[in-house]
Amino acid sequence: MAAERWHVRVDRGLCVGSGMCAGSAPGAFALDAGHRSRPLAEETDPSEEVLAAAETCPVEAITISRPDTGETVFPPDE
Image (cartoon, rainbow, N blue to C red; front, side, top):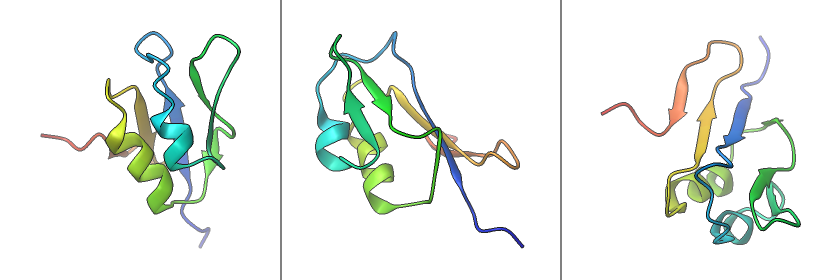
């Protein structure tokens, strides 16, 4: 069985460039020249840092899903 992976996406239309994600998970996010966040890799291993970055995004621009099933990891279904 393959190890779990996460697909990370930033909605650049929502991103306000606060940099909180890059501060929370510098190995997973960076701000580009336009001061918008981008994931450093489309898929990553699950980590508390990536989840914290998504949770602390002030405009909820970060989504995390499982690439094999499409199941949403964040934001949670409410």
